[in-house]
Image (tube, rainbow, N blue to C red; front, side, top):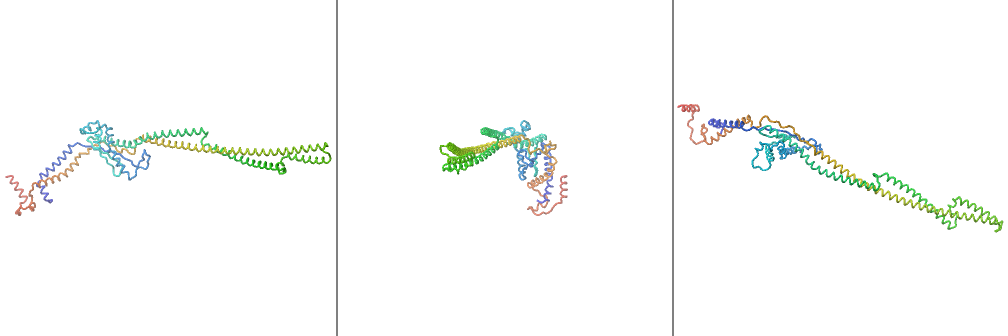
Length: 465
């Protein structure tokens, strides 16, 4: 069908065309005026993904490639049943007659769940383009109720975001407290063990000064032992030499005897007495008193020299024995001192091990106590990186129905619908409106065509007649 034919068709059925246009406009006007008005309240919340997290002390924020996923997750949280139930309880909607009237009879589940489902069905959540702002829209016939529910959803979302961060920490707090008590008990036992060991062995701290004193004492004993051994070897050698000289009757080889001043004095007197005796023996007889006096004097001096030599040998032997005893005593003292130092070092090693156990237990307890305190502090926080940006205001203009917009749309849609209806009616009841309508039919050749004006005038005359 050409455009000229469509125009002639509309002109021929102009009554139907006008009736449909007027009907559509009337229906749209009536619907716009009679349908209940709906008001849409909008609240905005912001998810600051780059702000430091007060719960984890993370200052790096969320990576750029994960920010969109984070915002999408937050939108899912807003549309969750948990948030909706908070709104129901906060606004006391399960006792609101309006929402109770919306419930279907014979429903399953609690009233709060059913009202939460009604809220979620009407709630609209969207995010800004490449941004972190999330918009919550809630429509209702009452503008004040729409604004109250939209703000309640925003507040419930912020509260839920805090709970999602705080709840795990509150659950961990009991575990940290129990662990801290166990570590504290372990620390107390380790400290008691350390104190008992110190009291048993008389240790004060690491007692390094005591070990230094014992080492110095060992050095002194070692020096004394070396000196005593040197004296022992010297005295033993002199005593042995004197015994050998005495057994061979070689007093001249007894070098120590020449160092004895008393013995040297006696030998001098003995030599003088021997010289005197030799002189007296040549001049007097054996029974002469001078001879007997000189002989007695010589014998007495010889006996003194012999006794003194014997005393010198005994003294030297006694000195050698004393030197051996001193060396042995010092050797025992050195061995005892070494054992004492080894025992002290062993005690120090055991003390270090026990002290290290105490330090490790204290470090673990301090770390657990610090973590427990941090978790306790974080569990009491009441804010997060989610905040309400704009609270919903009570809308003054209804969102639907919009009379002007509906009428404008009706003005464009009504002619199209009227044209479609005219074409449909024409297909059911076709008419001849011009000679072109006969061109494709087999009615025969066209003989004549009346002018439109004459035809119209004839029709008017016929009606008047």
